Length: 136
Image (cartoon, rainbow, N blue to C red; front, side, top):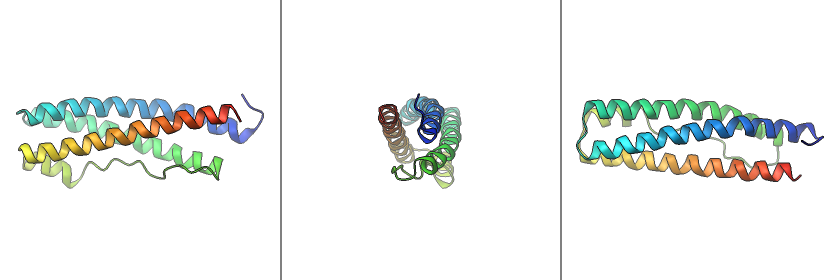
C-alpha cells in the first residue's frame, strides 16, 4: 500500500467497485441468455426472469455509480465516466411485455448487449486505474 491517503482511499474504492461491476456483468450475461431464449419463442416467464436479472444489474450499477462519484472526488483530476446507469427500464420494460414479439425482443436484446459492453469497459478501466495507482 502507498503512504498517500488519497491513493489508498482510491484503491479501497476500486476494490469495492470491481466486485459490484463483476456481479452486474454476471447478471447481464444471464439476462442476455434469457433474452436470446425470449427471441426464440420464450414467453411471460422468460420475460419475468430476464427483467429480474436486469433489475439486479441496475441496482448494482446504481451502487457502483455512487462509488464512482466518490472515486472522482478523491482523484480529482482523473477522468472517470460520470454515469453508468442502465438504460433499460421504464417504457422499454413495459414495451417488452406489451409488444412481446421478435422486434421488441430483438431491440431489448440489443440494449442488453450494449449495457454488457459498457459494464465490461468499466471493469477494464477500473483494473487499469488500479494498476496505475499501485505503481504510483
